[in-house]
Amino acid sequence: MKASAIAPASQGLVNIHGFQKDSDNPRGGLLHCALEGLMTKATVEFHARRTECTVIIDGRPAAGNARERVVKFIRNLQRTFNLPSGFTLHSVNSFPADCGLGSSASAFAATALAATAAARLDLAEHRLAQIVREGSLTAGSSIVGGISISFPGRCEREGATVRKLDPEKLPLQVIAAVIRSDRASKSLHAEARLSPFYIPMQQLCEKTAEEVLELLQKGDWKAAGDLVELNVAFNYALITTGPSRLQMWAAATLAAMHVIKRLQSTGVPAFYAMNSGPSLFCYTEAGYTELIKRELAGIGVTVLPAVPSGGATLISSHLF
Image (cartoon, rainbow, N blue to C red; front, side, top):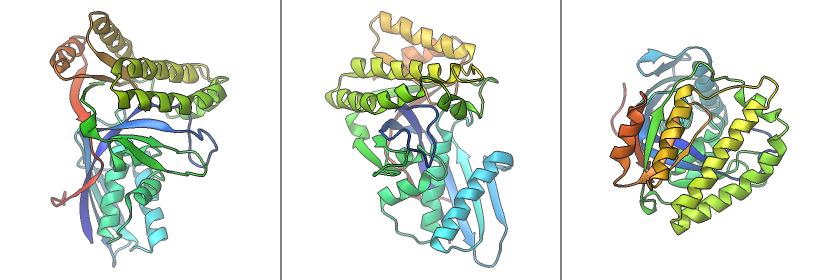
């Protein structure tokens, strides 16, 4: 009972800090892009005669919150589908984790697909996208791929994630600027929910996601990018107006934004987006990636190229 899968990271074009499972908010859609080039590979095996669980991430035994989240997720699968109690999980990222690049989504998507395949469960994609939200609320977008809209709050479409644009219909290139910050806080989402702007932001979120999706479908990257960048600003307002007045961005985050805004002023088609960490994503058109990579590397950040991706897939090579 062993299987392996690979899944792309998820980048939030339109998102809202503070959303949580089993909450009425946000009821509306969040818009995400799956990114090939930022990938997690996972191998899962269940053991009928053993009860211990082994979790290895990037070659090291997982500990603390990382291990707890994975074990909780697998245990839920075991209870739901009456699976053997022992398991081994190995996962490897092709990009840095814990800095806002979408590694939680890719990790849980790859784990979910590998685990259900190892258990010989033939689940429909939409069902798998619902299940994986127990590990990461945005991991459904890594399951379905492309540009997808998801509904992580409790509503009539609970957990639904639906692909709206196929990756081949998006002639966009993405450059991830890898940025770490000691200002990052695990209480970010709790802080955002206590901001006086959280309710208005919820109400705006679904409308913005629909507008950006429509603009992307029309190929109007500039107008879509303007709204995506505005979403970044609104999300930062949420965490800086919570009780602790969190400051999540690093100096390099602001420097990367300034680089992209300067390039925009010279006619370069580009816009930036962020998840809930300090790293930054720059979307652009083919022909401009090398220029943008050089400019971002010039401020001292590591850059990783990516493109819109399909969803999680099974693979034949195993990690153990």
